[in-house]
Image (cartoon, rainbow, N blue to C red; front, side):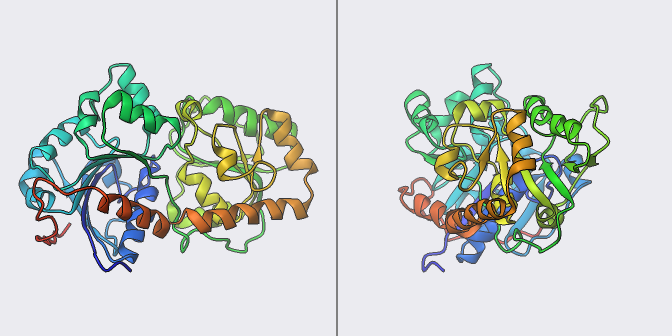
Length: 373
């Protein structure tokens, strides 16, 4: 636990609901890690009906979670907490994010940062002129741009967009909640993820087609928003929404887990998803599509199986002996628990924040305003 606890305000897409997004579990692991390290977090979330109706963590015990209806409500109610925090972090995909950034910047917070859990998607949107969540001109106003994507994209953020520091902040896993349950496998291959048009072709090649060709095996796809027009084979089970409390059991009951990456993230590389870390922590061996940087994280054939086509997936499901399957799973789990837990990521974030010189309301931390949700 640190001797210099920070008071951090995070304005993010959602902490309370994991429905239809990967942000909530990412924030939960990070904020739990910050809490374990002795830091204080106020998480501010826009109160929107689709998350309000699907909250699976309405009252966290590791931070203060508060909701706001409009931007003037955000500033009017929580302005002092924002103004005097040691650091303020605005996340990607916050509703009306560009307007939120301008309103928060006007309060002149001590350390003003952005956390992009969707960096390649964000930059692709900016290239198309879409700036509801973030304007290109705003990037240089941040003291640091934390990116869940590492590699060359960090240099691009600094050189092309003018942010003083672009730093990697990968997703992380809550190791206390994501671990093997000891349950026997039910499915030969499973996938957890919200429907995305750019991921669907890979899901077709790497799960649906293998299911058609291996009718005696069992498959599962969990996640919302899949179109009714998809022709699921009879041996593919569908789960519309799987709350985080059931993730460990879900992963533990698979012989293999499929990891599928969005097209923009494949192009950028160095973009491990939270699902990749969660599956590995639960001891499920992973079959993944290929992208730059993946083998640096989990070496191919040693801690993960990278598939290039349907035949690679079928070979893994039918030819890999049990000893090697378990060894791949254990190698991945060891690597993830060493470097990619919520506590490890929290320590990294705090170190980076402390390296930023405070400015503006440099009395950050003097006000410890506790807000009831």
